[in-house]
Amino acid sequence: MVYDTLVAVAVGMCAAMVMIVTLVVLLKNDVLSLQGFAEPADLIQQSLLYKTLIQVWVGLWITGFFLWFWKKGGQTIGMRAWRLRIFSTVDEPVTWGRLILRLITSLGGLGTLLVLVDFKNKQSLQDRVAKTEVVHLSKEANDHKSW
Image (cartoon, rainbow, N blue to C red; front, side, top):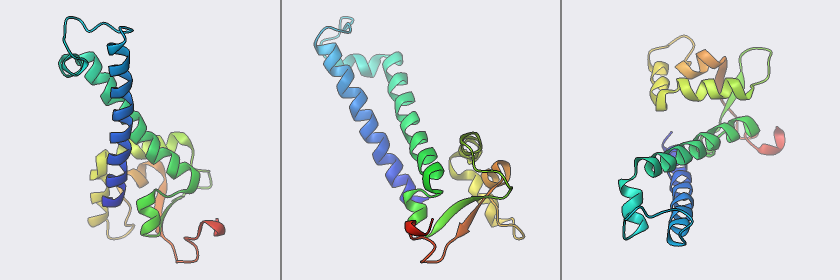
């Protein structure tokens, strides 16, 4: 989780930078109104609309990071480092809908705490709800060529 958090923070920072630079360029070139503020930074910091826009944009990129990696390989970068992979516990493929459900029910990582008290199944809340499981892979199975 720590590895993925670091990567997600980096993704969020890059996404925020792109949005902020775009807003500053649009504001400086009078495409968007400065609304009486001297500098774009002042307007962005005071505007609930712009702050919300940036936060939603960053949230979408971070959400996309997790969903894309889970869908395309069953692993995020942090999971790959620890040789962990998501598998379906039912005879259905892991769909985008199940992955979104998994992300929501993870509760920002709190859903994983269920593993500490679930001695029998060792499943997190998000895995129970999305009908997935996280499996520890051998070194050979973790090689992307074996998928």
